[in-house]
Amino acid sequence: MSKLITLQTPLDMHLHLRDAQMLQLVAPLTAKTFSGALVMPNLVPPVTTKEALLAYKQRICNAAGDEKFEPYMTLFFQHYSYDFLKEVKEHIIGIKLYPAGITTNSETGVSSLDSETLRPTLEAMSELGIPLCVHGETNGFVMDREKEFMPIYASLAEAFPKLKIIMEHITTKAAVDLLDKYDNLFATITVQHLLITLDDVAGGMLKPHLFCKPIAKRYEDRSALQKVALSAHPKVMFGSDSAPHPKHKKESCGCAAGVFTAPIALQILAQFFDKYKSLENLQAFISDNALNIYGITPPKKEVTLIQKEFIVPQSYDNFGETVVPMYAGETITWSIVE
Ligand code: NCD
Ligand code: ZN
Ligand code: ZN
Image (tube, rainbow, N blue to C red):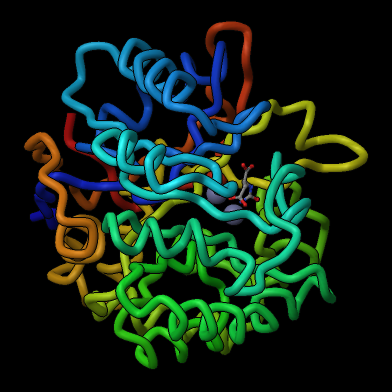
């Protein structure tokens, strides 16, 4: 008998849905198997007003079609007033902070990460109970960027003890170690960072479809991430950071950063948790921890996975867009029961 697992209300707490044709292509792929997702605001221009936020949410819902799916919206961090935040609070799940220029579409991010400079907005968020999601990298040497950001996380966590701070897409042992030092720190982890190291990206032939920010790190970093994910540490949540870029922008001189995993993430996670005899913890990693951390009640959805081979498509094509997923053409040993 093949093994089965049924997941309740799967959530993706870090997702890029883009806009226009790309949104049309990718939104249904997530809406099919996830109850909800935290949607990143790094559009061009970024989402910074209530009007843009609500209009984007509507476009997402339209693109998702008939699926029961809740887009949890975020604003792109800038200096916002208390009154503005009070007004938008009911429409957002958090605010995403990007250091300027550190990743895709972050040019208008913050240039000073000093707690005092950020204080007016962070204090307002803290008072209103709006979480802060952070892309935590400095502009140092690429392998050290996340580690170098740890003192910044620590000073923010200390300066704003009531502010929930989510360390997005963590990739290092340093981040895992920091997690338990402050009550108000949490983290998302992607599937690629649970599975690959820099060796997979650049150790042999260069693999553009595995290139993302932060870049995959060392084996000891991956082990630390695996340990907290497989044990479903209550402060970690699944966030795919599925970041679609058109095929020609990945397979080009000057490859865009981002790995597209939305349609294969659940299958890979089932295979991975099964391999390490931890399937019983997948429910907490994929949903329960996020429900507790964010205090949300997404639409109910049940997704059953079976231990049966699934060949990852070479690409997903529709609406004139083509995106290549992680592991294109390869076999995953778990599939979704349709
Ligand atoms: C993301 C994107 O393409 O929007 N890219 C990535 O490599 N992760 C941005 C981000 O999450 O940093
Ligand atoms: Zn990021
Ligand atoms: Zn991202």
